[in-house]
Amino acid sequence: MAVELTMPQMDQTMTTGTIGKWLVTEGDTVKEGDPVLEIETDKVVHEMESPADGIIAQILAEDGSTVPVNAVLAIITAPGEKVERRDSAPIPTEKKVEKPPPALMPDKPISTPLTPIKASPVARHLAEAQNIDLAQVKGSGPGGRIVEADVQIYIERHVPEPVESGRLKASPLARRLAKEHGLELKTLAGSGPDGRIVRDDVLRAVEAAKIIPPEPVPEISPEIAPTQVIPMTGMRQIIADRMTLSSQAAASVTLNTEVDVTEFVELRNLLNQKLSAKAVKLSYTDLLVKVVANALRQYPRLNSTLKEDGIHLMEEINIGIAVALEDGLVVPVITNADKKGLSTISNEIQTFAENARNNQLSPADLRGGTFTITNLGMFGIDTFTPIINPPECAILGVGRIVKKPIVHEGEIKIRSMMGLSLSFDHRIVDGTPAAQFLQTVTEYIGEPYLLLV
Image 1 (spheres, one colour):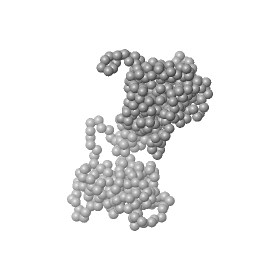
Image 2 (cartoon, helix red, strand yellow):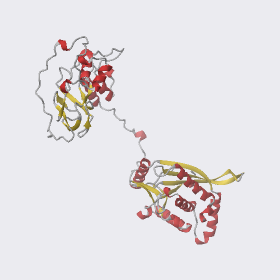
Image 3 (cartoon, helix red, strand yellow):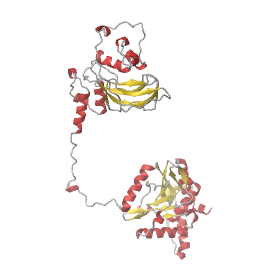
Image 4 (tube, one colour):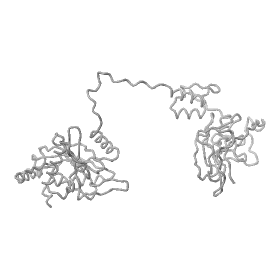
């Protein structure tokens, strides 16, 4: 049989109550005594309990709505029970509430009656905590059952608030609202009995705060006005969007190391001597493309991208080369870099650089990258933190080559050293495999003849 959950009358003068917040939704299963909603009055904020086991078949009053005492708030049914939905909660005819005779509300505690007192577990716990005899409390639940709200009402009416030095008089609801809105009670004037701060006092202060005009923002004086405004359009806007995407989407981590490039420098010089007749001049970036491509074959996780269904290991090794322009940056891509010779890689990079400066790169030149190399060594930079080029997994930053004394083969010698910085997405790659990849890159650079193996 369906059970109606109604708005209780929590004091003699109460005619309406406000739904603070439902703690359940339609279709939820509840047990007798479970808290189902919060009801707010000027005096208390309390949880109303379910009067029976069942299912919340329909909720008739929304959060924040004010409804009359005894109005139906929700319908609770047994599992499988069907009831017709109601359009709205019926407003009951007001009944005259008679004050109980003095004998029912004695000034002194009375002895426990012979018949057991019906009370919810929450109500009993609250009464025990406040040392209240439940026989003095009038129940508003089904069959006169005492619920938490009844005990709260008794406390408001009969239990004096502890007197503390400097403590302001305020209702529980007023204290709660003031805390929610960040208001200090001492700044409010109370309109309740003996200057007690009540809900309306807090709400008036909240509304008053809303109409206070914000402080004016000072305008920039002509003395500090900009000399030029550069519009964030075109390439600059695209770069800004991609860098923002990278910083927000990727869990970027950067590893820095220093590598002995003495043999690497000598190999480049030797190759350029041999290739001079063919008008081929290899750059360090050309050699690094081949080094990185070989290392990516061993560590394919660094040549991947993250999509909704998981990590995609890319079949091709396509290495992008960051090329700086006057007002931006482009990243043309060397496709299948692991399958191309150094001469082919060198010619493609030179062509890309020339086309980029002449604004002649095609969209196809910039698509399909799986890893990026960016070199700032020519600007005297040792190491830096490169930003991952989405949707790629990693990027290698290259610093300048500097001769310095180091310990080599047990002796202090002058060797050529270069800084490397690997930024990678930690969502895709852990620190150890990323470090192993960087270590493999340094091994190829330190002993470049390994490229022939």
